[in-house]
Length: 245
Image (cartoon, rainbow, N blue to C red):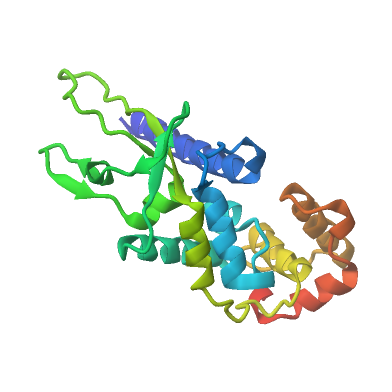
């Protein structure tokens, strides 16, 4: 019995890691994102646009990946952007559109798609922020599967927003004061790297050179150009900021 429980725990942990990896792969490869119908913007690109508008230089572009890894500072920025978009959507400031994964026209997301069906057929609303963060939604399966069979999800639909609506949304946002003490993308990258590599703090036994090399390597693996890696001086300055301690 104990071994069975251990196996279940291992399966759950593996699926969790697989899910995190899929999220990271999705956000790290924008070239693979779908092309939206004419006059629309894929929601993931809209999220990046809102982030850049909301945080200015404080938005370094890898926030969604950091969110999947639960890196505190960058994940906080991503969550704030998702909540902003979800709140505007709920308020009716724009209409969330969807189109089939295989291609087709964009239509408003049907209201019935925004609910889960529980075992006793109760309708449970999806969290708007979760819908926005996923950038996609599956068409609910209408028919009830036979007893004992696995329920399969419906067709996948991508989510987006009309280009004109996104422009209006961006114009209503004001650039906030950068919540990070770092004043440049390089310094922000250092803060994110430190949070990812050493959640409990940088080991005191780690030599400065090895620490700097690991920070630069993290930056490379997370989409930063080799020519724009933080210098030793930038790293030292960033480490003196409260956000990295």
